[in-house]
Amino acid sequence: MMTVEVVYALPKEQTLLSFKAEEGIRVKDAIIQSGILEQYPELDIEKMDVGIFGKRTAMKTLLRDKDRVEIYRPLLADPKEIRKRRAAEGKRMAKGGGAMTKNKKRIK
Image (cartoon, rainbow, N blue to C red; front, side, top):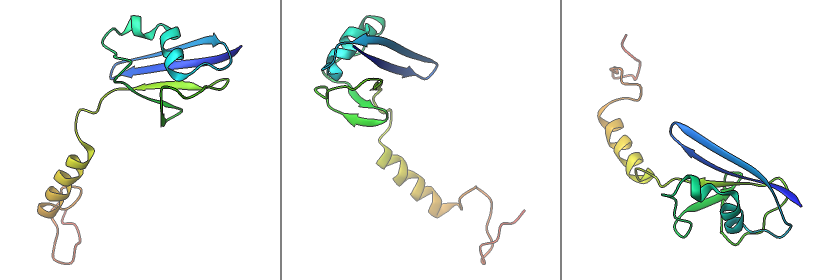
């Protein structure tokens, strides 16, 4: 037997479920056995992104003792679009929002 954790975080709520599992358990099976799908019925095991300790992984990945399976929420905004928007705003305004002189010193 080994210990496995399954975690899922919402903006104002975090759930961590720790349980004993048989050797050879895969990520998908750990999610099912944890009971988290009953707690959060909106989760779709066929569409969710998952990781182990912050590294994305596949549902078929074998777990090791003390692994933490993380269920990731979908992104609300595309990171590339956010960076493009910030870069465009940066051309109009210096980082930090203060006015700049010609020699790039901040005016207070």
